[in-house]
Image (cartoon, rainbow, N blue to C red; front, side):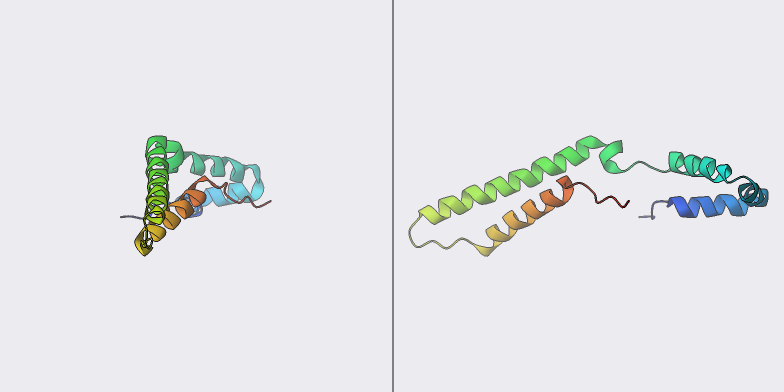
Length: 110
């Protein structure tokens, strides 16, 4: 799968394609703002924004796995002499960790 384009690489390729653009940017720094807006507008959207149904489906499936693992663990504890399988614990923990990673806000640098 090809790597998605990065804004810095697209900006550099635009500057290489048009050498006068670099001179314009040096003379008028506002040109860089226009270039940045053009570059970011043409980049593909993240899956969360471009296709929210895939994101929602992943969240629902991970939530279902976490709930099923929890219910199965409680049922196994209710039976005499039954040990909770390690696989069930791993599935529940992984699903909850993945949900936390998806639903937690991204850190913002200031």
